Image (tube, rainbow, N blue to C red; front, side, top):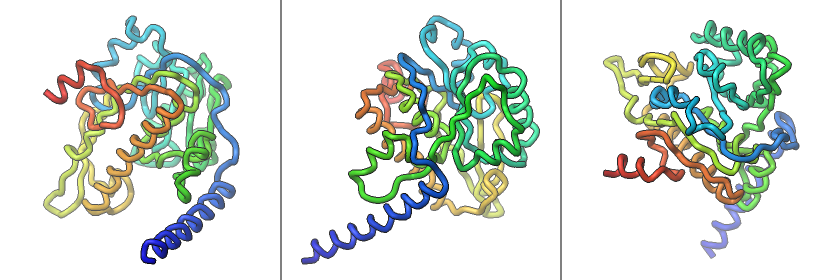
Length: 292
């Protein structure tokens, strides 16, 4: 009897969550797959971790000869952007859609999008940020196709999750732009995705200062290491326990993407040296270095 009651309770709870999810999808998002153009072959996804510094000099070598590129955030401010001319670009962080401590660099990025991109490129952004994108960014070059992604986490009956993921209607919660990038890459039809610069070494960067403020040491390939309080960086106060839950969601999202990729016969290979992500395959050389 207890088991039956628990099953009924879960069924009802999932029903409520599913209804709320559908309403949010209807009101804030779209019931169509935003990724319409399909590609094939290999895609190199270049995340922003400090390990990408070691990869940048090789991007024009034969190692990447037959690969398309997907980049993100401030990559366009690096000269390598104009050498590799990526087909795909991703933005997700709020700093790209409103005034913030990164306003000047964000404006410089949009200036490049408007005036210097002379090749065809797809720019992926959250659908919910489109109006802010137009208002803050001021438009982009006609060579850039803006793809508004349904960045809404699925909730409800588990058997339906696959349908909404595969149709581009929902995705693992994109708490980092790398999640958005990998999801878009899978939907775009690539059979092999090579992931670089996805260090995700978050637990190494957290500490609490003498004022009991949660602090984060950040380091990207395009800038020096810096230290900010979590409130300064994200405009919200958080406890250590809530931040660890936040990071857990990121790694769980990678696990969901791995399942999706396997179902669609897409191979994701994590070629990030020292990455904390354990969801994807690695090269044999990296496994020896990490484990041994």
